Each structure stands twice: as structure tokens, then as C-alpha cells.
Image 1 (cartoon, rainbow, N blue to C red):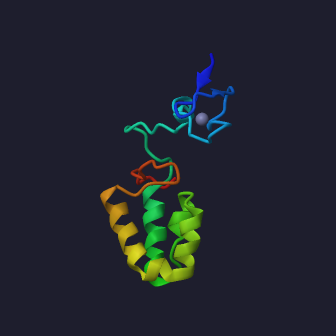
Image 2 (cartoon, protein in one colour; image 1 turned 90 degrees about the vertical axis):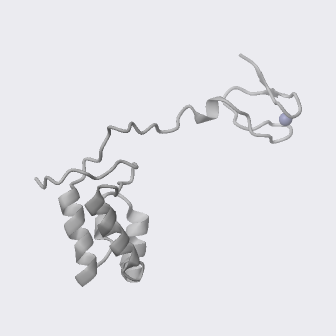
Length: 115
Ligand SMILES: [Zn+2]
């Protein structure tokens, strides 16, 4: 099925996301591989372990809880800055307690079990 650029009318090659002539973004199929998070899905990470690791941020090393849930980038940032000077650790601790803390996939870490 041929597609044509909405800007200049050039035919768009199969699978291309941008017009080869004018560079305009081609609408439609580009969003088909976007991750869809179902509201009933939850993280397989333990909220209990994450909360304990987060609490460690108040006494020694911050950010391990973020690495634990897969957020390695901000985890290292937390490690280097002492949990954004404790502010990030406090925010994370509160969101863990309210059940709104999410893992790398955007799934909420809600399960307290620690086995
Ligand atoms: Zn074009």
C-alpha cells in the first residue's frame, strides 16, 4: 500500500518514518510499537525490598532502590548526589509508601512480599 507525504506529495518508501524529499514526519504506523501499559499490571519487584533499600539512602548509600527496579541511570545519579541531596530519597520513600513508585517499565511497585 503506497503512502504519500502530506507536505509535498512524494511517495513514501515502505517502513520509512520521514519523507525522503522534504523530511516531514510520516503519520500513522510509527506509533504501532509503542508500549501499552495496562492499568492492572504491576511490577514484579518487591516493594518491601525497594523500601528498605530506599531507607538506606537516609543512613549510608542512596539510589540502590532505583537500580533495583531497573532505573540504573537515576540510581547512579542518586548515588553520586546522595539522593539529590536527600530530597530525591524522601520523595521516593513517600511514593513507595503510597504505592506510586514505578519500575523501569512504568509499572507500579506495590507488592510487599520479599521472597
Ligand atoms: Zn515530503
